[in-house]
Image (tube, rainbow, N blue to C red; front, side, top):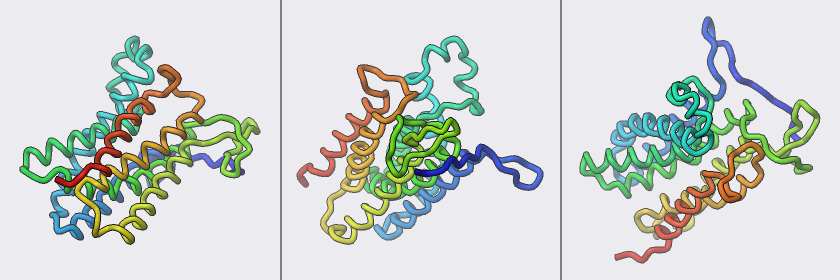
Length: 248
């Protein structure tokens, strides 16, 4: 059992910073650094990755907010429309961020005449580490409580009950996928085809997150599944196609 650890903000000199926002920012920068390093190893331009990252960040921010507004609390935001565009308001869905970021990366590559698949593969190397770090922010503010449990990684909440904490689990998932990439690359790295790493991320992230979402207690359900789970069915299928497709 893990004791209750909570942090919403912290002082830095005369200003107060948000814990969640800080860890998300650090995670994003770490993800870009890993992707840029991978790009250099694959003879791609790491500067392109950093330039692309600016637009990915903007699109991911907007996408994460839009996904939450449209699929998790649409009724509330119909009554409070101005809060839907308030960046200070809570409510961001990482699935929307991933979709928005992927769309921005595709448009950037198309406009610059770049090989989108090649850059998607290097970006896929950074995402797990970014999620691993950023999700620690979710864990520290405990915005993804789960069902009751006696599991060793359950968190003892202030009411004395032990629950699954999805922020912690999703952080672990990120780091596990990052390590899995290193192992697969070590054993099979020279044999993989274009789009393999992008597809592998979609499969590992999709399967693990799909089953973890059944442990949530607060999220909206559509025909027994969360909005994120419905999207994960599509992204995981895409990942399987990319990994198993024949080389032409």
